[in-house]
Image (cartoon, rainbow, N blue to C red; front, side, top):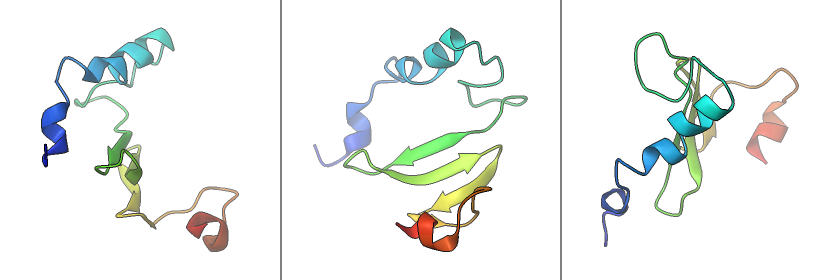
Length: 79
């Protein structure tokens, strides 16, 4: 179908969210709710990461780096 989001069933999401967080014993991750860490990845139709939020702050939006990691330079972030 043209709407790839309709292919994802809400019962499938725990497989890559809350179940993983529980197994790794990350009590503050795996759910979108107040008091949780607010780490998110957004995927495009090809399942490639396009946006990254860490601790509630966007680091990548529309494939463009907004914040760099401790050991990153702008050149390494773009590659």
